Image (cartoon, rainbow, N blue to C red; front, side, top):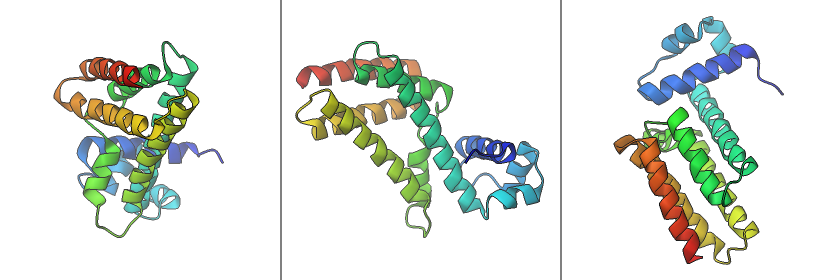
Length: 183
């Protein structure tokens, strides 16, 4: 079912505000104001702030998958190099200050809600995707390869906060080539 324009607007504004200021650093009033919607519009789409956070994280995951899928549409050398390049583009375009999913795990861990699980499920889905891609590329030790590749991707995400996405991506490409040469 396609999202209504108001729901999309709320999700996009909330996702960006949560990313920029933290999950607890943003109130619903600020989201309502910046999305330019009525209070009831927000509550018609989301029953609580936690539901809005959950859906914002899911929205972020969909955006990430669109970047990953684009990497497979324009293969240059190997699918893994293309993934690193697209991941770097995602970091530059969307996520230059680190990982929203890991922030969610950190902030909501130990609480009684679905937010942490949604973020962890996203990371596991990415890992399983890398495993399947390794299998289709005839990498025998696909589980270890996928895990190591995931660490390269996660490291690039972390290093973007320290250096920048271009430098982190360049190093991740070098490391991915080294990993591919081992398998």
